Image 1 (tube, rainbow, N blue to C red):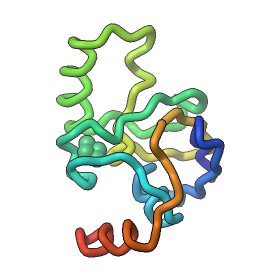
Image 2 (cartoon, protein in one colour; image 1 turned 90 degrees about the horizontal axis):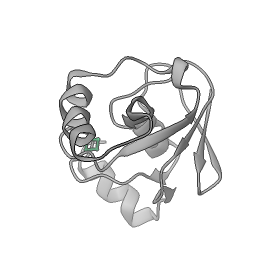
Image 3 (cartoon, protein in one colour; image 1 turned 90 degrees about the vertical axis):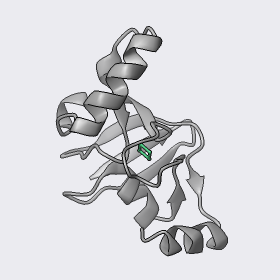
Image 4 (cartoon, protein in one colour; image 1 turned 60 degrees about the vertical axis):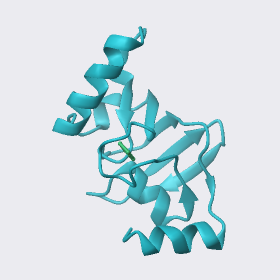
Length: 116
Ligand code: FES
């Protein structure tokens, strides 16, 4: 299935069982992170613009981290904010995440060293 990422305007292939961030990494894209998908930083959070009903349930990490964010930031629809390192999709979706871009080779090698 395809994940459209705005504002970059790129389409990323998402395989069944993989998180949005894993899909981006596999396809050679950088996705903002501080914890490298350990579910502790919230830097990967994205806004779901379309396909909310096609996403997996919030993980324990999302419930804990996003509840804290929701308290601090008033949002029109907090359910639309998800952690890309946790959430999986079962169909085509569109997300908004500034900072997603094609990796350079050096970035990819660094990610591989981190074990991802
Ligand atoms: S990458 Fe840190 S919480 Fe998702």
